[in-house]
Image 1 (cartoon, rainbow, N blue to C red):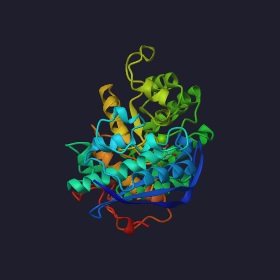
Image 2 (cartoon, rainbow, N blue to C red):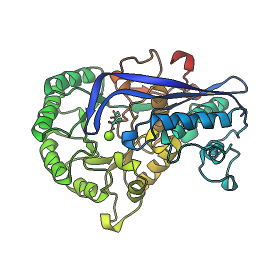
Image 3 (cartoon, rainbow, N blue to C red):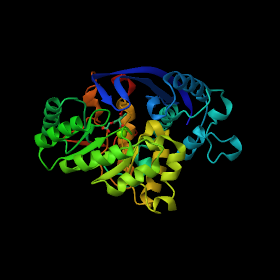
Image 4 (cartoon, helix red, strand yellow):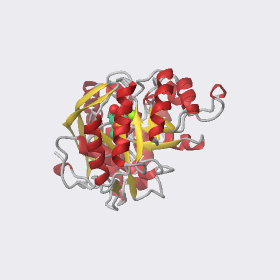
Length: 386
Ligand SMILES: O=C(O)CCC(=O)C1=CC=C[C@@H](O)[C@@H]1C(=O)O
Ligand SMILES: [Mg+2]
C-alpha cells in the first residue's frame, strides 16, 4: 500500500463529571486522531490518548513523535501485511526487518523513551487501512476465530452511596450485567458504604468489579477485601502498588475474588515477571487476570502477545480503554473479540461518561454488548467523528 496522505487532528474529550480514582481526578482527556489515506482514497484511522499516570508519554511528546513518524511515512510504500505494520513500528535497526515496512523509527529523531500511545495510534490506523484493503473486519487480522459480540462493563463514576446506587440501577436498566467502581483513596468505611449501596441497588446477580488503582497497601488490601468480599465481587483491579508483584501474589492467594493486574503491566519489569513462571511466586500465575490497555501497551498486536502468554500461564485477560475516544475504543473492541477468551467483560463503555459522544457510531453498547459487524476495517470515517 502507498500512504498517499496523512493527518493529525487534535482531540479533546470532556467528562460529564470528573472521575475520581486513587491516582487523582480525570476531568478532560486530550490526544490525537491519526488519518492515513492510501492511493485509492481509503482512510485508516488511529487514536492516541496518552495517560501519563499509567506510564505513557506526555501529550506533547506524543504529538511531536506522531508528526515526525507521519511525515516520514507520507508517500512511502509498505507491504500489505500485518508483518509490514509491525516492522514499520519496530524499534530495531533495519537489518532485522522481517516484513517490507518503512522503518520510521530508525530514521527519525523523536523524544527519548517509550511512546506507547503514538505507537498505538499509528498501528491502529495502518491495521484499519490493511483490513479495508483486504475487505475484512479488523479483528480478522488478529484472529481467525474472532467473536462477533463483546460484553462490556459500565464504569460508575458517582462518588456518594446514594448517587452510585442510582447510577447502578440505571446501568442495569440499560442492560449492563457487569458494573465497575473505583475504590481506595478514602476510608474503608466509606468504600464499604458505596459497595453495599450498589449491591443493594442491583441485587445478587449483577457482577461487581472494583478498581483500587494500586491505592491500598498490602495490609489495607487484605483488610478491605475481607470486608468488601461479602458483597460478592467478580474481581478487583490492581489492589496494591504496581511494582510489588509479590504483594499482589499474596493478596490474590487470600482474596475472595480474582485479582487483576492493571497498572503493573505498564512497568516493563513487572510485565516480564508476570509473564514468566517465577519460583518465588510459587511457580504459578501471580494473579488471576491481566488488564490489557492498548494505549499503554503500545497497540493491539502487543496486547495480543501478552494475552496469549497470559493464557498459557493460566491467567485470564480482558481489554479496557484508557478513557479514550471512539476510534481507540473501536480498535480495543476488535482486540477483545480476538482474545483467547471472552469470559470477562471489557471496559469499553466509557462513552456514557463523556460530555459529547459522536452519535450513531457502531460501537455504542446495546444491552451491555458491542456487536461487531462485517464492515471492513473499523467501519468508521473521520467525517462522522470530528
Ligand atoms: O474499565 C473501564 O470500564 C473503563 C476504563 C477505566 O476504568 C480506566 C481507564 C483509565 C484509567 C483508569 O482510571 C481506569 C482503570 O484503571 O482501569
Ligand atoms: Mg484499572
